[in-house]
Length: 73
Image (cartoon, rainbow, N blue to C red):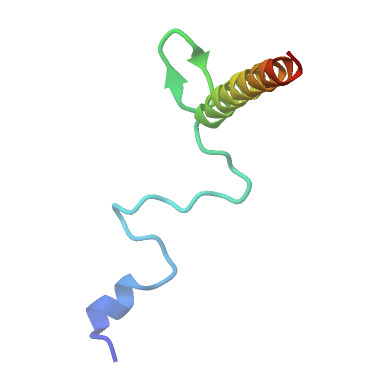
């Protein structure tokens, strides 16, 4: 059994000094980036990942075509 002081702090009521629980469905604030305005960090990362993937795919395609050309010659 917990001492009464600890039992009280474990109540469902938010204690003073604790951040208030976020309301359901409330979105966290989007991170702001200098020069980019208000951009969602996750979206930026996703775009970068997509570009990188496209670049790699293009490189492998070129390598395959080169390989086919060498195989035929």
